[in-house]
Amino acid sequence: MARRASDVLLDILRDEGITHIFGNPGSTEMPLMDALVDATDITYVLGLQEATAVGMADGWALSSGKVGFVNLHAMGGLGNAMGVLVASMASETPLVVTAGQQDTRHLMTEPWLSGDLVALAAPVTKWAKEVRRGEDVGSALRRAFAIARTPPCGPVFLSLPMDVLDQPVEGKAPPASALPRLGPSPDVGRFAEALASYDPDKVFILLGDDLPAAAASGLVAFAEAGGYPVWGTQLTSRSAFPSAHPCWSGVLKPDFAVIRERLEATEALVLVGGRAFVAYPYRDVRPIPEGTKVFHVSDDPAAFGREHPADLALLGDIGATLQACARRLAHLLPAAEVAGRLSRRAAAKLRHIETLRAEIMQDQQLSPLTADVAVLTVFDALPDTALIANDSAATFGKVQELMMTRPGRYFFSRGGVLGCNQPAAVGAALAHDGPVVSLAGDGGAMYSPQALWSAAHYRTKVIFIVFNNRRYGVLQNIAKQLGCPNANQNRFVGMNIEQPAIDFMALAASMGVPAVRANETQAIRDAIATALGRDGPSLIEIAIR
Image (cartoon, rainbow, N blue to C red; front, top):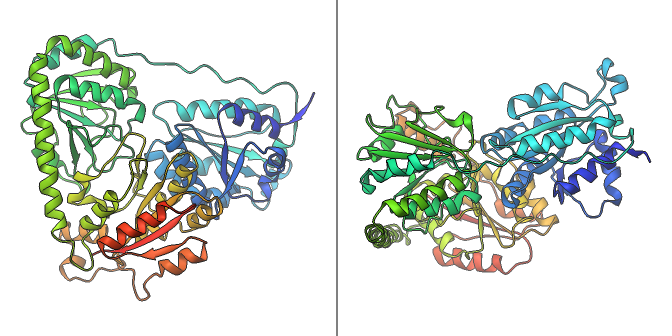
């Protein structure tokens, strides 16, 4: 019995675990919208702008651990979404992005709403194709999902002409192909024996920003096997190691000179994943000191040698490889010495946390609050069930060492694209059982404020925190760091957001989101308590220096 290609599409979405379609529809998407009328098991999540739709899908994918699905409107809609797709590509978020195309029967005449969608999408996706026959919809969609979820993950794109989705298709939807599964690297034994020959205090674990939460148990077991310190990068798209763990030492600032200084005493560097060496601005410094041995563990062959050559490259499932190495190390390292090292790390970490907290909170009476005080107060008021979506430079100060990040519970828009975080928080809330907290600056909050409407419409439990200093603070700080003329003359061209100041209370109210200003620590705690008890979203504006 023949069915429409759009019905095959929905069958595959169900089989792929898709419960939400994120989009902003237009006339070229009408065949899909018609098919969804009777598909009550799939929720269409409306974004009032295409960038918002992609951002929500990104957050849903990262929170759920599945591939997100987006449907955009023609050439213009895809163009509106490009900025967030840049961020999704950088964060390696698995997405299948589709857009409606004009009817193929008159594409030759270049009708209204048509265009070369594939050429537009290609630079910011892993794979981009246009489907020209209804019978190819199923196989193209299966291929798209497989490519999106294959490491390194990322967005893929399909152009779907409106007449193609209406074409009759015979037979069942094509099944998904079995996915290849990597096991531990065959070089685990060499790896463990090499590490055991080093002083454990001179072994340094550095995490790339592309590690999934699934690798966390292997990472923890590996770190505990030697009592090794674990470091991450400041601009990490996700967390794969619990910051409360004694081995967690913090994040490295994106400065090669700072990174090299931290690594000076290191003899063996264990690099896990990819893209661990992130720097801005440029410095003519090699971050790894000469003589340091580099052991690189990754599930992506392209990661090896991309940033720095490895003395030993271990290709395999990251978690399984590290778990296997941990078991080997248990027989190679004295258990009592490892236990003592872990105990000392825990005690030193506790002392450092207490000292740093006291140092930050001694400024809590200042008005406006410092960014460190504001951020720390927010984190102290949140429950353990909270998921954090962050793109605020307010978190880059001393307080970053105190931020509680948990695998699968912390995401950052590492692509440098503002406007991703707030919609990502909305999408994440649709997959997360608990509150989701969006941390944004006042500048970033204005890139996709349409997310507030979607949060209210779908009654998601999102707490939007807006740290407001009425300027692009990170840009001004970089100008000061580089000694730029606009900083030296205190005339920051195009970097202030005032005259008029943005009224976030009115903006939130217009989107149906209750909002409050909280400019003292107790007011912040009270506002978060109220938001946690609310069935739906909230916005809290905090003035900072």
